[in-house]
Length: 535
Image (cartoon, rainbow, N blue to C red; front, side, top):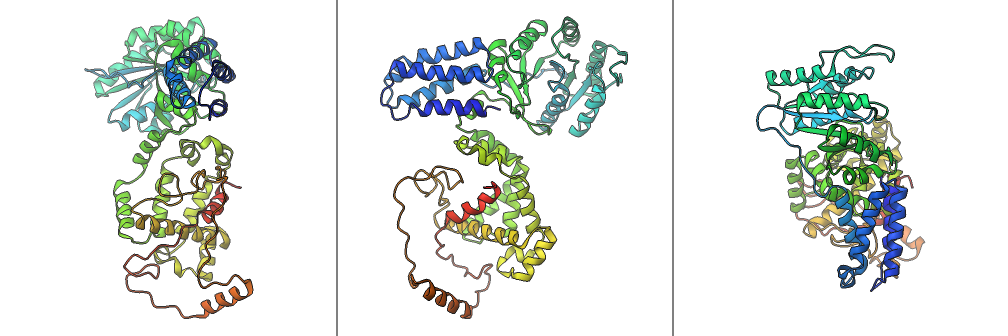
């Protein structure tokens, strides 16, 4: 959603690099570009004025003039001000000390209240709560039925004493205020810890909508009134938020459809305009595509600094701690990384969700956004099918994979033999890297800040910046001729030479003692990874 805004801001800061001192003209030009970027992103004009005014005041002060790197100091100021307009600090839900906690959802029709009710219930259930959904939206056709379906998917009971309407021309039956009050009593009798009341919306703000929402609020006295807003509505977000703030007195905001391709101005405007914090964000259609909103992390994403903390939290949920510890111990001991391990890691990686979303959480990924968008998520499923078509012995010892075995695996997985060959080659590269990690004490070769990699390269990621300096001369391998004809004769003689017997206990023809690993060739890994990115 914030791709265009992120690109504009990153380009603006890039113009400041290399300057030892920033003049007032430099700062004014930067502020001008930031203002244009925010207005293009549909951020409310009053919010843009406040935001750019604060940045200019701080940038012209001693905070920047006395800094060793003024450009980085400006980025730091913009980041802090972004965090401020997004709400400052994340706030958890307020829970009742006695009795059930009552949460009321309010917002326009189409904002995603009913789906969000199920997501919130699913989230609270994972936190150890026992939620109950109350269907108080009796006006939208099939709203009650939809909530029942969502509740069933989330594994949460739904209280729906009234069926609601099924057609536009059908007369509304039942009183939503009475349904909400009965829902509270039902939760108390069944000892539910949380009650989530789904209320009716309209296509636009009107007096009838506000009066009904205000009546429900007065009747049930909720601990939280969450305003559900579509992050894609743009400038209209300000007027809508102010209307609900005055009519219902909301206590928090939830952003939906944050995975859309709209400009996202609502997310940067609503917290500043209403003075209420953004508590949650919905990032997709699935129940688990729902997260606590952290202003500092969202600001880092907008400035292309990544969101490593969220990525770590997702990994902790998806990865099996015992399996991860066992694999780490295996690497330290110098034992070989097998296709069984490869499959296990891939399956746990798939449990984390979309690879595209995970890649965008890494710092600097805005530079390769087009390649990430071209990433084919189905390649992971295809790779999984190939490995699962192998026997346990073949997974543990890929050297057994001769031509006939590879042909059988290709038929069993519905793939081509070339796909099997490509997977085996990628696995051999990964295995070489794991051996090198064991030798280097856990440092990964070829990645920046982790034991190697060419200066200026982005971890060998396709599309990353390459180093502009002179390339290191290739090392000549001892015993191999530079003449292609002579080298072909040498390779033919080596193939005809009988293989030495592998020592006992070896999975890949290596002895128990760890051998010196071959030099890891990142270029071959890049070529294969390019396949996934459809280069």
